[in-house]
Image (cartoon, rainbow, N blue to C red; front, side):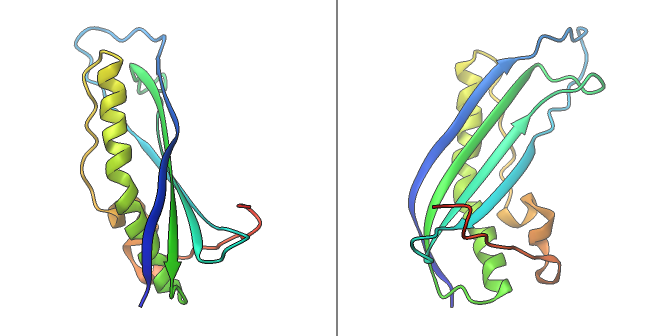
Length: 149
């Protein structure tokens, strides 16, 4: 059975910038966050896995956003007994669920500190954040030990 524990967590990047777009009064905005995740195994210790969870909010001309946000958190996990693809999927889902509340809180605080209405991302499970995590048969995860030193 897979075992893991969070050893370290840090905010790698937090940025907020006002978009220089004119948004007509009364326009309803659809803030659409984009999430990404990378998981890498450390070279020096195969039990250490680094998980980077990122959220970007950017607007387009068709769908303007009043601001741009980049929020990236990095978690370092010690993992034991991860042998199968299903174990890797379970770890990816659980690591996401572990880091996501911190990322969510950081975005709310970042927007509040910028003196705009705090943006509260919905509380979702790690399995729904990334479509690949929803089913064991759909999931593949490749670890590249050369990526993290």
